[in-house]
Each structure stands twice: as structure tokens, then as C-alpha cells.
Image (cartoon, rainbow, N blue to C red; front, side):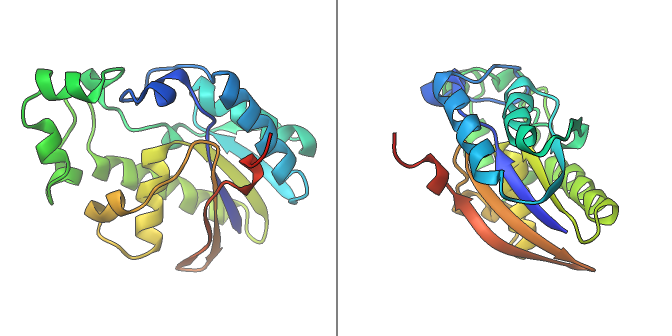
Length: 203
């Protein structure tokens, strides 16, 4: 299977630099433009299926990707963004003020095993996301599919593909509207493309 990992387009929370997890915020104007560009960029690919997190920002992005291929978007709950609990929608200054020590713990070696306040651990995100793409690989042998999802989901998958410890996720970046590509073989995933934003250049 060839898997296109797509991060949703921009939201106002992204633009303002707010912590964003399960808050169901929509794409902003630029995000809608990015979704349209993604649809055009992936139109030549032989997509057999398009999967999406259940949140609006991913579903709307996924519909733009799926439209040229005449396929319906299939919702995959395991692709939903990390549950960051009470930190959702806060600025980083507000997170630091309301939850002393949280950000320091988050960037430490123990960060992936530290649950967010009222939320989940990054380790939990990786486990469910990996099970999702493993199932897609089994379901779509020798096919090409797209999965439209979120920042933390994509980063946790990429570090596992690269054989890095989960704590190394901060060494990677995946922009809104960007695409990474994985090729899967039995017991092996290969990173073919990382954080590609060429389709967003110009205009």
C-alpha cells in the first residue's frame, strides 16, 4: 500500500498559535484554499479510498481530496487528534499559568508517557494511530489510499516508521496542508516523502 498522510488545512486556532486537540474547529479561509490545493495535487494519484479523522477540519479537507476520485470519505476514529483535555484552546502562556510544570514535563524524556490534564498520553496516540494504518495496509494491499489526520497523529507515526524513540517527535515538523507518503510492505514501512508543501506555493 502507498499511504498519503495528509494534515488538515489551517484553522483559526492554528493561525493564532493555540493548543488544539479535540476542539471541533472549522477550516478558516486559508485552510479551505489549502484543502482545494490538496485536492488538485492528489487528483492524479490512483486513490482507492480516502479516510479521515471525524473532526470537521479533517473531514472538509478529506472531501476536497476525495472529490476528484469519486469516492466517499470513510471516517476512522483512531485518526482523531490527541485529546489534550483542559489545555484545548489555550495559549501556551495560559497553559503554563494554569498547569505549572506541564510544559516542562512535556518536553522531557518522560513527556510521551505524561497524560495531558483530562486527556491522553502521546503514547496512546501512537498506539491507536499505528493500529489504524496497519489495518489500512491489510485492507488495501497494493492500493493507494489517503488518510487525512492531525499533527500529533502524523508525528507519532513518522517517528515509528523512522525507528526513533517517541520522545524524538519534536525533531520533526508537519505543516498544515502538508503531505507525507509511506510505502508499506510486510513488516516494513518506508518514508517516501516528508512534509511536502509544494502544492501550496504561489497565489
